[in-house]
Image 1 (cartoon, rainbow, N blue to C red):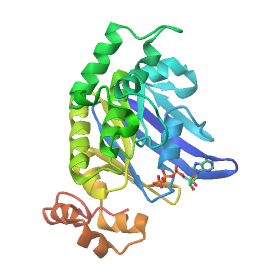
Image 2: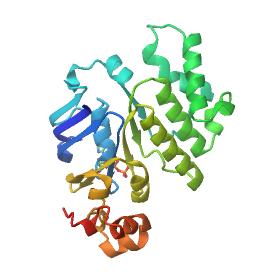
Image 3: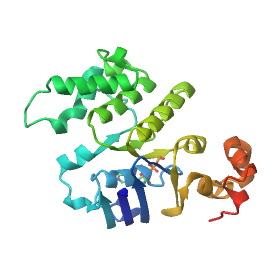
Length: 267
Ligand SMILES: Nc1ncnc2c1ncn2[C@@H]1O[C@H](COP(=O)(O)OP(=O)(O)OP(=O)(O)O)[C@@H](O)[C@H]1O
């Protein structure tokens, strides 16, 4: 059953539409990735999914219920958001940042209790960053901050995770660690919608992918079927051969006939 469904959704700002007629769905224990060029509207679509931006048309359903029917609190108990790592002034300890994920579980004006602190500790443990607990968030590296943001979302205990470019600004090692964490979370029962910039990372982590191009869905489906040199060339303005030359993982899949252009799947 689908956890999240978008039907013919159009989103934008003012008179300008960024994306139109977007349909997609996210199943339980599934990782779906939005892939598209800079400025194509990935973050804008996530804002609509998070209820922060009202679609101009179309419908977003969560657990089968249309989005306007969700209160802010109910939505936050179901969907957690991991923004790109916060680089501005954020003068809190790691523990305080992760505790912010508990806000929706607290009664009005109540302070976090033992249970909240235990949930925070569990989230830090899961991501292997307990040692950062008392550190100032602003003094952490980009990779450490990204893990703290994921821990904050886990502390929210919402089983739908929305991540915006979770591996941007990370070094190679931290990219691999974050991708491994994302897969583990899927295996632990989370449904994950994310945006990414690196096609090789999409090949590594996603179950399904939605390619966005020229305001629409160019193609969507199982990664091996959808990620073709032809399509990636279209969305990034590259010759398909350039895509193959720079994306060895894609070539291996094409050669083994797993999917891609070799399987004759063209948009
Ligand atoms: N608050 C806003 N008001 C008006 N236009 C906006 C606003 N936020 C984003 N845009 C515009 O909407 C378009 C889509 O932006 P968005 O951030 O969704 O793209 P993106 O695919 O996430 O880009 P990137 O990959 O570079 O992060 C861009 O042209 C951007 O300039």
